[in-house]
Length: 107
Image (cartoon, rainbow, N blue to C red; front, side, top):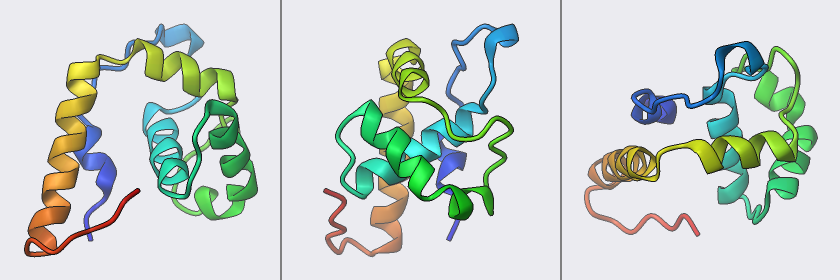
């Protein structure tokens, strides 16, 4: 299976360079997986990340650990909704192609 983050690689990182402590890809991946596992808030994304830190560190950079709930909030509020939607549709479409039209429940 391909890395789902490849579909989000074209997203513009809206953050100021000097204030970036976390890789955008790390934040996006944790958020997506946390949501798929039932997280419904920024706080729950942070808790998920902390609970799964060892697993996440096995393939993410996480240079400053797990992002805080405020970091998730700030990033998603500043991302372009159109770019995020386009990336998400590309990712979901790739799943649909792999499953040959079978239903893939992600809620």
